[in-house]
Length: 297
Image (tube, rainbow, N blue to C red):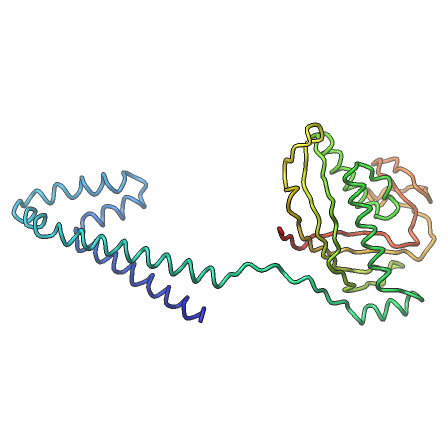
């Protein structure tokens, strides 16, 4: 039904455009030409062009001009009203068909785990628990968001990679200079799933999807005024999280941020770029957090 309504609306649109064009051309071809030319040339307006170009031609033959004005005035008014009616009908039909073809729906919150990936993880990690892993991942997310909101990233340095930590630290410094604060609360986990795993170079990566609802807005730290976002409506965020675990105890010999050679095996600072460095992790840490969709609730 929707398909046929779209076709009908397009046909009506085409007929209406032809009707308008024929009506204008039948009224006075010089006016239509002048308006067409003027709108593309960027010169004088349609009204000034059409009046100046048509007046010299019309007044050159008085009888034809007078007969046109006397006999054609009523028909031109009726035709103009007809054009308006056609345009209104066309717009109404287009609005209805467009609205019906694009209903507002909130995307589904059901995620499907990758059974093959989970089975392989259970082979690689004895006692691997899918539900516990996802719950631990959600806790990491909450801890990171809380640390971000309160400018306390050091508290989560052990659950995110150095790359994420340095990026967040730079962004927070900019926000702090502006006197802004990102407020997030009312978290509600809607669904989560393990989607893939990668085992290479002594690193085991697990890719996941999370759907989380919460309030998220920016305020002025001094006044508390909301600058961006809304404190009265939640957002539904669709995330891709990646968690990584290293199974080796080798020491760090290069800075993960700048690549310079360093000698640390615990938390420290790179002497070349001043980035904070942590030792190799033997537990899961978040390495990526990507928002793939956002829905205003």
